[in-house]
Length: 150
Image 1 (tube, helix red, strand yellow):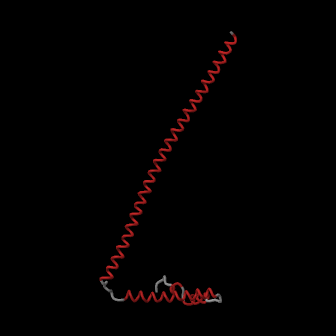
Image 2: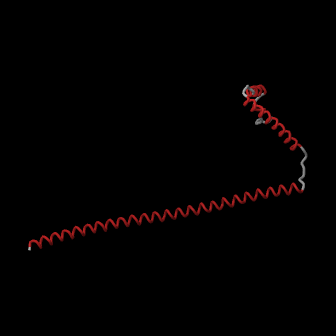
Image 3: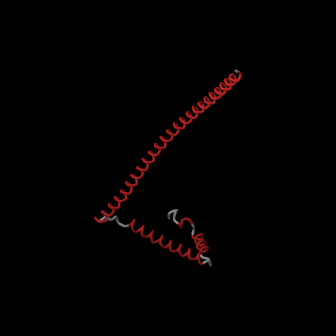
């Protein structure tokens, strides 16, 4: 008996208790227990079929069966190849997008540096203009003062 089969997990007494607990007055639970019983019957049928097929003599494939298996294998191979092409194309697109983003980041940083330099130069020019205005105002006030005195 396989250790993964349901029979090996529970002994007969435990199994009987579990089955008994499933059968209650609740109609939904009794329906579930009926479905469990149907599944167990189906499982037994499948087990018998598997034993019959595996214990039977090895059979050769006829031509039509071989062609059908070949077509199935080609179809699966086609899907695998198509999936590989798609994922390869997606990988190439992702790499190209990463390169574009890196270029844009480089351009943005260069632009930011240039903007900062320009702002510093503009500030220096404004300060120079303010100084020139102040000097002109001082000169004008001096020349007016000397013109008044004369």
